[in-house]
Image (cartoon, rainbow, N blue to C red; front, top):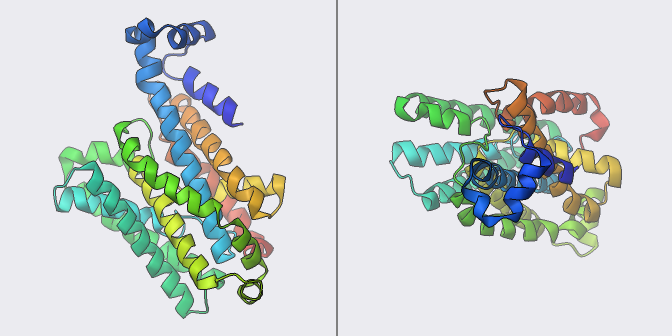
Length: 319
């Protein structure tokens, strides 16, 4: 699926490209400055790479947070992590006037961790991390709060409204590729931490007490999981804005193929996430052509029915 999504991302757009045109541009460096070269090298390849990185990060964050909360409905966008990161970025830009990429990335990470701590603290005070209903309700409340505050700030700055309304709905089209150089090490660190947690997540799936008896340091594992989700979701949100339901869709699609073993789910979820983002971006380019529909909107349209279906299947709330 990922390979097909990459091919479609390069070939499909307002200006459809043939195989011969793309092959010529890729093979001949001098053709980069032609019209086709600018489309391929200047627009679609960077956009595809951004989509792969963001999709992989959000999917891995979703799989990780589902494992640590033992909640199949957990997702960075549903639990307020993405909206907290988005709110912090907008706050830094418009309240303090700081447009530095480094400041925005730092703000996204702080916003993500603050939102995570608030949501998990509410859940813990109401029965622990496995209290599924409390966790989802707390996440929904924080998402609504941060989204409202973000929208209020954006609306107060008309000059930047047009730019940020695309970013806040999850877009790849208006992203500066240079931001990836700053965010990539953060996403890599988060991925390493998340992937290394597979044995602990398999033990936690049985129950915290059982995991503890198997030698798992549960509090330390929870903290490392929070760090991984913060780095992955915060970094991805800073790049492309909130991508709703991606962290929910990708892990469940992978579980349908591999089962619940996190040794398979964690490495495979990023591939599914990258494919979902690229396909959503391609659909967004064509559904209202010549205009574009943001990938985040397409993902939300797909993810909302999936979320409702999962809610109705009560047996899937804890995994």
